[in-house]
Image (tube, rainbow over the protein chains, first blue to last red):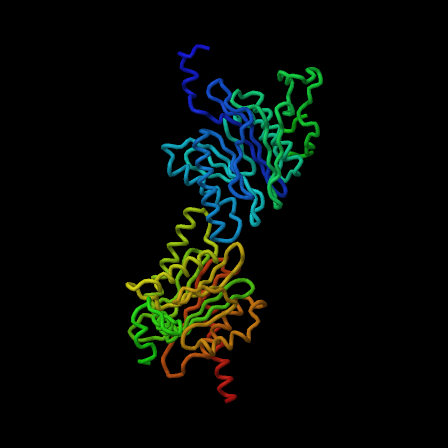
Length: 249
Length: 249
């Protein structure tokens, strides 16, 4: 590789070129992220944790600049701790999301952080907020961000259903991240999943050789190239009347 | 009254030998000598009612406001020195406004009442300041439901089902204790509040006005004046009840 070429210098800082995905389901939320941190073509960390806890029931998915999003996460966690001390209650997801958004907005000249604030509170149930660069805040039923997200909008749009079960939602998130990891060079490694409901956070770790693979994927070393597991071993049942959405297969 | 606190009552930073701070007690006297204010928390909201003595025929009806709005979901009624009460109500407004800006949601009642309490208490700590001569009754309606708080000149803030402050507070509290507030709607409570104010009003011929507000399901959980016809109807019932009891005498 010719070091004098511009390409690798442009990404000199570690970047969470990333895929982060979150969705609500009946009873809570599921969030997922890949594990790759890269500097140009060098993978600095292949199993990083891009999901940061802000409180017992609220988590932050980070994409964009790694140091920027870590600082934001630390600060918001601190403010939420103070909020818990003052109010004696768990904070709402909206309050956490607003704190993230204000930091993004008030420092928009300096920060590059595209994040998802995802959590559960007793008044609103499971909620997903997108907090992209610049300082917008958008409450959504599902959200994706990071460089890998560009490849999975179609999948997410067509496969998302409201009020999925926990298993269906986890499958949707896992597949979305896996599909993005297939196509995005800056995403890959492992998948981390967290399911959040009234009982707290439930972590799932999908290590590299367990990540779902798809036709045309180069099989993971040691795996039988013929018997590739097709996406969604237990696929979500396709509803008979999808409200205007595409029905595939 | 001279001689009660002689020597120990000159500043808010001096204790008396029996553990009192006389300046705070004197501030409380300012509240005790003011016209009566009552608050009632019922099953669907909170009612605040003030008796306002008309000091001069030259005053425009409705001036001398004793009830203030502090954000949509919080109302405050003042007893004691009106300008002092206005200062504290403005502070409550500031707190509610900055909370919403930072956390994106309306300030919970119990957080606001603690902040107002801390603020009022601060004026009992320094030689260069005098305690506020006002008690605030806060009516709030947040995610946790309706609540009534009272913050007095010492800075203590307590939550009530129903309470009264001012000249007629003893008689008013006796009447309030007879009410079954948990089963009452705000509509019914308005009538009861007006009846109580008429009953405990000092019969020395001074004209008085009523200022009554509520925050309840019927008002869309927003703090506002009670509708004019409801107030007129309540006054009619109150005067009729007084006449009935007069005839019994």
